[in-house]
Amino acid sequence: MRTDTEHAPGRPGHAPGRFALGAAGCALTLFGGVACAATDDTEPAQGTVGNPVQLGDVQTVEREDLEAVFAEAGVKGTFVLFDAGDRSAVVVNPDQADERAVPASTFKLPNTLIALQTGEVSDVDEVISPESGDELSLREALPTSDVPVHQEVADRIGYDRMSTWVDRFDYGNRNVGEEGATDRFWLEGPLEISALEQATFVAELAREELPVDVQHQRALRDLLLVEEGPHHQLFGRTGLGVDVDPVPGWWVGWVEQGSDLHTFALRLEVEDQEDADLRESLGRELLVALDVLPAA
Image (tube, rainbow, N blue to C red; front, side, top):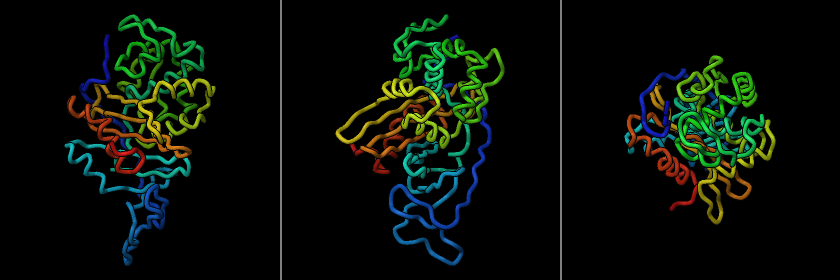
């Protein structure tokens, strides 16, 4: 059975998020200093960029002005930019940023790390031969829409070890389903993750702080490099759900600018292939607007 998560498919439900508004007072912004919440009888401070909200333990600033990026493209979506240095974030559409959806091909990141750490794959250049699909190495399979290679890898890892490592990574809802179904849980559920959780997981990977050997995190980092400029490096991976409703379209990764590290997660509700094609372009537009990527 061939499943291609990079082409817009059908759709399923995702668990409701646990988003909580709050954080009265001031929150540190990534751009624009300090943003203070207005009380009933005060006006927002001049120069404030965004409104402070709370997502878990992360001080977050909502950028309502950037919702136009999604609206003008005719799609619904959310975007989280996480500062790995001070653990603050900028978020667009925070009501969706804490909702979980299947990770789809973005799960290739933890799947690759678990395979390497358990020794089920010797290195990223070992050729994997699934019963269906092409023979590819992890280096070749990660940037493509080829799913059978990673299904074969997940089968090698097995239910018990997969469950242990997903839990150890604190990855989303940490639910890999039932034994005997290790090849579908990240495509159709029950594993789900929010945009904020994606951004914080990627931050641990980028900082080489996940509980696996550093050499494996560095190997994965090399596979995720998208572009390198004079003053920045961009790393990323897309994902697209299958047989779920709504269909999540992901782009997750990070940008390094000297000692500054910002991770990001964009998720769209994908209606058709045209929506899916917007993931990286909209993500780049938001990264440029937030001064994390240079303008083209």
